[in-house]
Amino acid sequence: MKKILFFGLLLFLVQINATAQNEKFKALFMYNFTKYLEWPEGDRQGDFIITIVGNSPIIDELQIISQKKKVGFQPIVVKKATEPGQISKSHIIFITEQKSSYIDDIKGRFSATSTVIITDKPGSISKGAGINYVVQGGKQLFEICEENLREHNVKVGSDLLSLGIKK
Image (cartoon, rainbow, N blue to C red):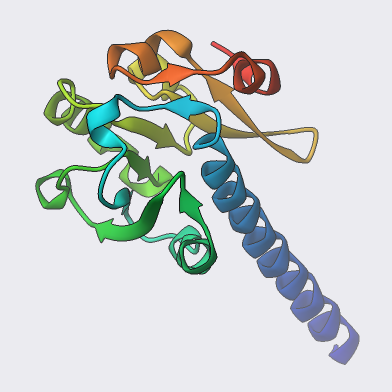
């Protein structure tokens, strides 16, 4: 009985560590996306705002990155929202899987802004996300839709397009 309990606990801890590691990769991806995306000139001043909609460990990982890195010359500010009405101007909005039902509302609210919508749920590209995280073969990857990014007046570099799964 003790062995079963021990192995169950060990498996649980390994799974938690894998999830935390995956969120770290997503945060690093998100920061690195900014090197290959180009916002209009007017959006390259002041703070670079990343808003997370929902609860996710990615917030903590992005906070760590924001203390050490910038996007160009812009300091990174990470904000959290639980619903679309709480979101103010943002360069990137990350919608967690639990809040994926908000994608239509968020896309509508930010249709006239240069905002990159990043999601974490299959099928979100077809709903307007510019980038969607996916896991294939045990690896963290991302889908990318140049058309959805262009609709938000954000240019995407060919290097980023070649690294993602084009949709």
